[in-house]
Image (cartoon, rainbow, N blue to C red; front, side):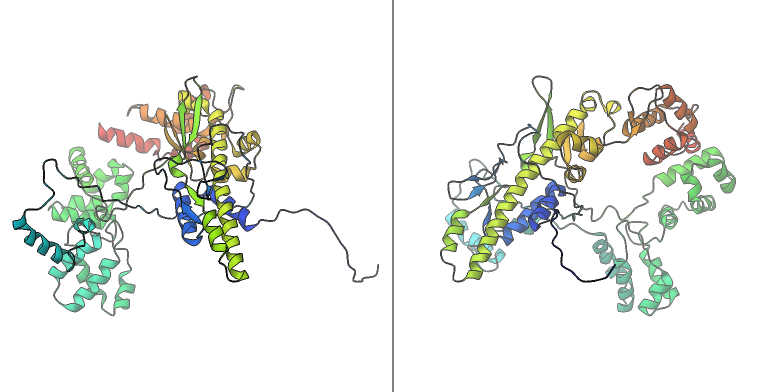
Length: 515
């Protein structure tokens, strides 16, 4: 066969990921906080997008509708619990979303209300002093108002708290320089995680000199700060209480045996009886293993559900979106028409057209995202109605394919929808991923059991056991088999590790110590 060059024409079909489709897929897997930040960025980038602040207490979701001012409104009122409404978005491209911290805008304008019966007009004799105070506090301008945020106390961090003590303890600038470097090396728990030799070489000092600075820093408050490990942290706190005797020193040196509840070995090593050992253990429990955790605590963001599930009057379950988590944006077509008439060249017209297309696609993507979440959540509620009615023991085995086939979607779409989304039910708030659990077959040919419900049963059995009747893994397997659950011993051990339940030997030691 001769080798030659030739031209051929072929016709084929393929899926091309347009930027708009990639944006829609990305919006699917964003959490409500990430979505708000994404929309905020788009509002800053696109001049044709604007917030709809007509009704800040209520937000609606529907297809874009023409508003009175010529804009296109992202209305949410038309989205209900019907899973068959709307066009549903498909996607097979797996992407990763970055977690972005949410911003909070605080309105302090109405924090301090005028007390009843107090006159608003100042007395003439006090006007001069009030004007002087206002001028001084506002930097020379009497028309400026007070900045209430200036009166809010700043949260003290661990580094700042220790640095204040450092200035009182050290006078030599070289000592302050080394101490300041060590302060910056503290972790959030107050531990000093450094290599002494490497740090000494980096600072150009001897290792003995560095150790002397560390010893001085270890006398600071809170007690136990600047420790290199847990044993040293406990040692510093016991020295402060004058309780670091030889027996306690041996106990601290063998802290891993205490974690295992191996009291028999500790009694032999410390050469004490049971009463003295239990007293020493009680003193250890009273110490703080993380002395620096009190400072600089991060703000815990409240969990906001994306979907609400409530009892309907007819006994069924009503599924509805949380409209507070859905952005409300408008496409200002009036502004587009006004600006487009005054464009000077083709480049400006192309820019405005691109902004309009991007804004319309964002509104449509947000609408379809809301409908897709509602459709998936509705099917999950239908599949897991036993859990909602009777509890975790009735949680059914469920996978992404079952939901995808029921609502005619791709599994990747369902996976993105259930990521970082939460559902508020009468039994609490759960991530949508929680309702997907692997199946464990039954011993007598009945319905399979959910892995989550089996883990719950194991936890209940362990919580109900007494010190004289500790359940081993083999015993748990036997009990579950009698209840119709076909499970192996290694699976029970794996589930026990997931639940952070210690072994039967450790549980026996712990419960006997409590008694």
